[in-house]
Length: 347
Ligand SMILES: Nc1ncnc2c1ncn2[C@@H]1O[C@H](COP(=O)(O)OP(=O)(O)OP(=O)(O)O)[C@@H](O)[C@H]1O
Ligand SMILES: [Mg+2]
Image 1 (cartoon, rainbow, N blue to C red):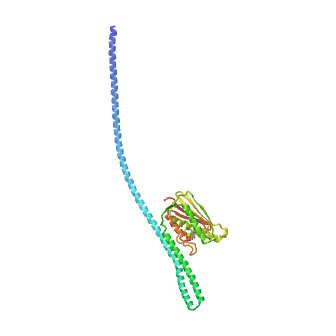
Image 2: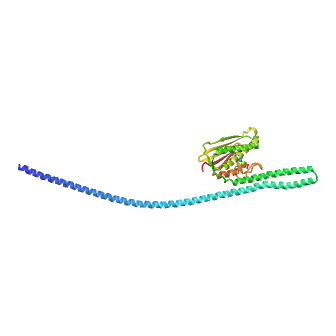
Image 3: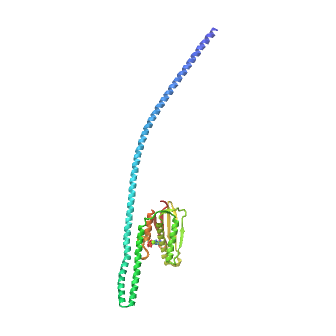
């Protein structure tokens, strides 16, 4: 029984000691783990701090780089602006130069062209004065027959003077049209309607001058073309010139070939990306390759004296250029010609 009691005491002591030991063990483990945690947080903080410092450094570096790049870009922008300014100045100079060149060409042409009818006018006027003296003489001599003959010569001379005077007049008018090329406001215009109108106007003009004149007219208008920014009167003049040339070319061919020949003039419009094309085609006499390069020059004409000034295409060329477009020609001699105008469809 005593052994049992001792043993119970002993057990209690041992139990308590074990518990104390266990508790101490736990405590130690807890403290160690807390320490480790603390160390971990410290390390983490140190790492974060390090990272923060690196980030700040990187930020400073980045800001510096951005600043450098901005300065560089500003410099490049200024340089670009400068070259743009220089380019537009050079462009202006070039336009001016080209204008002066065409003005020089024009002036030389004008001098040459006007000189011709002027010589006729002067010569016929001189001869007419002599004829008037002759007429007076015959009247004094009471010779009505001779007087009538002199009067007839005077009339013929005066008709010649009028004819050449009119030629000089049309040259001057043509010149003035040249100088008016730049004037006029651009308006959004229905190019199909304008082309149809010009075609009708030109055809009616030919029919009025020559009642036997007839030609089939074909139109192929692209209905999807929006209104385009042009000076309507100027473009009308261009198309009118082209149609007049086309009708003249078929008239010439008809005189050669007679009834078997079926003349036609056609006009087509087409969208070509942002541009609009106007194509005027005829099956007239065509243009020989050796004059093809000259037809846009002022005063170049193959028409008989007094029939044309040779300014139609040169004015048309200037008008199309002032619209920032271009005009080109294709032709097979004896078969016809085709003029293609390209105009920007937007401002
Ligand atoms: N469709 C065409 N077919 C054949 N030749 C042409 C055609 N269009 C122009 N030409 C040639 O180009 C020349 C110059 O044409 P341009 O319109 O400038 O003057 P012109 O017609 O001779 O005179 P104007 O226009 O003053 O009546 C013409 O004389 C002609 O030789
Ligand atoms: Mg012409």
